[in-house]
Image 1 (cartoon, rainbow, N blue to C red):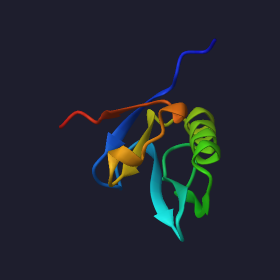
Image 2 (image 1 turned 180 degrees about the horizontal axis):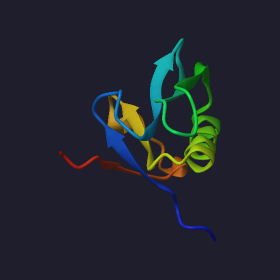
Image 3 (image 1 turned 180 degrees about the vertical axis):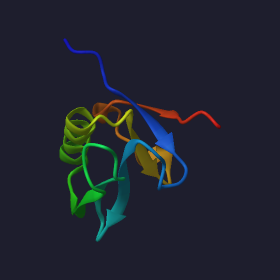
Length: 95
């Protein structure tokens, strides 16, 4: 069995060299959007439409792997909304 993925929780967006998954409740449904900055491999971009969280996390990991970002981080206002089936959520260390 594959170990759970560990995601760092970001407290702001616009972080350098990471792919951000923004999770929110929209019309009573938990959804996520994927956003990334420009780097040497790609222009800034997004999957800027709401989708199911597991699919958004999978897409974010693909962007990280294909374009050389250092990590996937999660922006979620209320950590209690995190579902442990998606992986482990830890706070991003302060700079």
